[in-house]
Image (cartoon, rainbow, N blue to C red; front, top):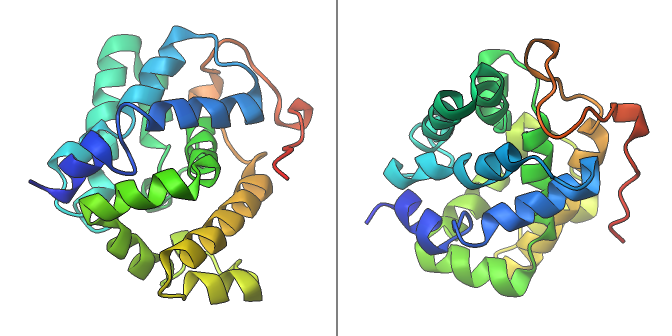
Length: 203
């Protein structure tokens, strides 16, 4: 079984759990996700991992395509675009800004408790890949603090996760005003201008 398939079944992208953490992240950033189309996006944005033999390599980076195509077929191009740009890697590769779903997705990782995340990612085999990749700097970002870099370079999964989640929280905060909607069209239940969103209260 491919690592991406295992991830969707019971790993870091488990279809029974991950969408709810993404919804939590969205709620913290943009308010309660009342639009049912958002819940489809939460559930489908990572479905492409089911055919991937890696998570952050050439195969994994294309995982955005399947869910985006399904969302486009169901709800139109604005929703396809929202899902395509949920990946920092894909957005950078295409020269596009990130979407709000990207921010919610990254915050979801930071909100997932270690007691849940580590066993799931360890079972699938994706944890080791993530630990190696994160040492190569997430999304080309050199924004780790000294302490975060020390933790991320640790061979202890608990330390690695603590460091990367700390970095991810700060990344979300730094980029929370940089999302754009497709063609100026806002998806979701209502438009929430970036300067009017409530500040994160994560500590």
